Length: 499
Image (cartoon, rainbow, N blue to C red; front, side):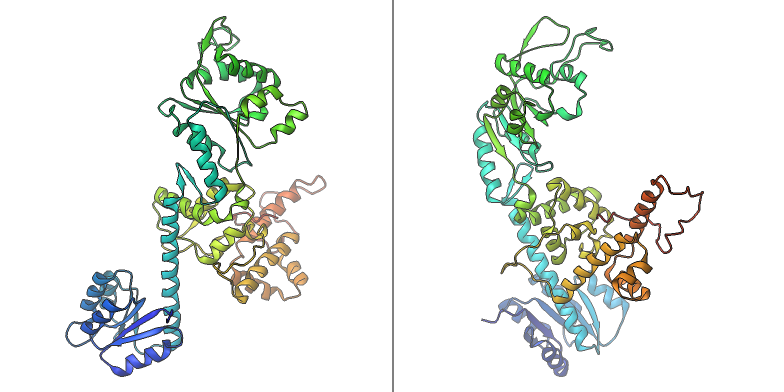
């Protein structure tokens, strides 16, 4: 069975049909037709990728046939071919859905390049459609994953949600601990009651008791009126205690008593108030180790850790990166009202190779940044990606399903990272960098343009000047005075290049 992409050539001139077929036959399965009627017959029996369609033919002209083709199969890309270059017909063809407009005579290389571009576009569209279908089937509330460990966690969440047991969620920062906590609440019988999230690390120690349990008017200086605490707000619902390891010992004892007695006492009040609250807590530290070191009460730890849930970091669930990137891309393109069709295959490969120390939150912020800076109507390519994605990339074994880079692409990726590193070491000084690289400065400048990294020099230079000015024995520069060692570093701020 021939698995080559299929091209249909529609032209009333046999010589033109033959020329196009000869040019494409090594890479494509080709069919031909001399008029629109025959072309539609082919399209009804064969799945066609590209149609090269003459705009001037006897009977129904190319524009009419174009409309027929799009009605029959909107996924087919049609390239209009004409001996006359008229803007009016080109615009009309584009409005009807033509992909491009070629003027006879055209070079074989141009024909091949255009065909390859169309096939690559169709492959990307299929990949995006697949990811979106996967996304639809791999969501759990606001959580997106197809990783087996995450799917097991989803099942555990559904089970534990039906109980009142305390849950301790552990995992690195940015792995989605609060999303899991919200999912537990949403899946539980308490879903109609409040979900109250508290970041324990963000509350000053002297205000913690008041924030948790509330206070009466006049209980302390500044208590001008009664305040309801988080436990009362969460009555009947779920209280999520994030960064639970940061609780001071004094409050740990009071929290333990609340969990045991199921009642609170406002600061400055002798009266106790019954509360019905389901506790879900989270930490990015080893709480068991904190217990061993005497930094956390063991009895409170066991009370909180009835059902443990451990979230894997993003670097251990790389299969989720394309799903998450597509998910965030859709969200931010809608939010910013921009049309960014997706990521190129090579850009997605770079995203999948990055270590993501900030986990899902870092990926979300990165996609937002890329959408904000994207010109729109174009794929996000490798050139749009910031340098830190290359500096902290990890090597992954190739798979049969993965796309390999060509030697040229791999060489360019290495050159880009290595040149940036040398420029970092030299503080952005192109002359010194060229000397280290063993090339002429003009050659280096050409490389910067070729690899799309000239703009990164601005951040290198800005950081170098900031470091230099912070040195005690560095002379103070006057307003507008140039740094004498900074002979060829531009000063335009751009996204940072991490070391």
